[in-house]
Image 1 (cartoon, one colour):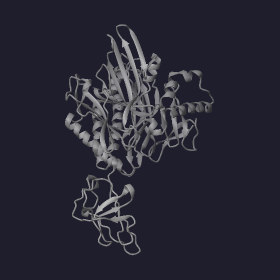
Image 2 (cartoon, rainbow, N blue to C red):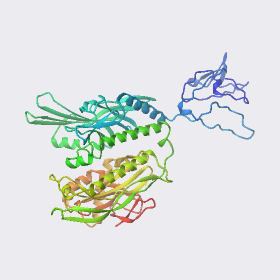
Image 3 (spheres, rainbow, N blue to C red):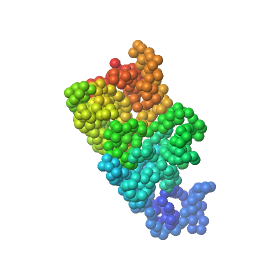
Image 4 (cartoon, helix red, strand yellow):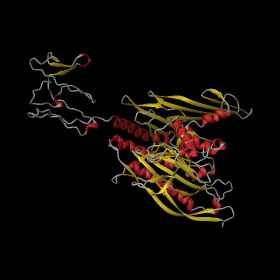
Length: 576
């Protein structure tokens, strides 16, 4: 399009159907003697060389420009004016579409489509008042499977539109990903959730070798009468597709009384099978059908899932929060803005505690103790929906534990099966905040119906931007193998500084095995990564440095909690 230096031009004047997207504007000097890179030929101007040649028309009829939804702030026209003498004029850049925002728009479209098809996230009552059955789009969860910085979208839904009867085969889970600016279904394996013979059914957030995976749990019959077979398979997302990378199979014949196992397709012993069964790490279990009170239910039977367990009602709340996050990000909000600075706003309360002994209702011990739970805020007093949701969830968990303690009686403290665990002290405090991540030290003292109360200290980690709990490996930037090695080496250094060597039984005991193979008993302060080890949970243990972050501490140093607090309210630790 020919234009003189002073008259300028607008995009409406370009006579071409310009598609939405990013384009390059070429300005060619077509004056005499200045046409080395531009040629005119019968009403057109060709600009550029080789594969980059662009043909522009010289005609200038009116043309309506569609900026698209992402360029609401762009002006209706752009005019280039000649700068005044001695000045250089630089036009303000036009806002271009954020590919992450575009992805969340596609996610939101899919969510709305499934809500219209299967119903809103919800639940109904099961066969008893204590059971909840998920309905509609029961599950929505964002997870970055390939580490590219953009989460994929996991959706779970009920296909039959019913509450009862419960049919686990009516639930389906899928993973959607954005590839080449399009939303694609990349995973839809059957039975991608945990389900047992009881009502409990739910989605497990699983990692394998510190990498996020999807996992299937399938039960069925075999080739012979009496066969009962279970299969577990983990799928990893790489190069735009999910592929199986790990599998185990257990086969039992109830008629013949025989059993066999395989690990990754090869025959395995029972011990090898059990070791492989522990390899996938579950950081959260979201019920889609199950008991109303997950905590109380797990007090009566063994907890088969690691990590945090959510009831159906809590799963629905999480799904609604995820949908709200997707909507906000689709509109360019939340984490599309600059990073916020966070600070602790923990709550500490004094409570009277009663512990029942084994000598009858009058055999009690009473004392007062500090209870605490972490809360977080943005520096300056502002907040976000994700942060508000996280704070509310943490507070709710705390209040449930406190209510359970205050309502404890001799009868409930001594059930016939001895399975009730009574929390008599809960001191969960923020010990450090770095960037978006908060590091919380958990200190719980529990009673199992007696007057002696074991104490457990471990770490918990939260991404304050997303409002989600995250694994230790993500929070600390260490692989599972690195963390385990640091833990073991730190314990040896601590024992040596304490003037003792770890006894032979230490390395063979159940307590040591759990400590040396589980990253749960680790937290982070401003100065160090710290491990907590108790040879006997009923006796005071040690908390020692396994990785120094500043010169103020060394590996093996034993730390104690100070009465002082940091400027942000976080707990301060001192060398013993």
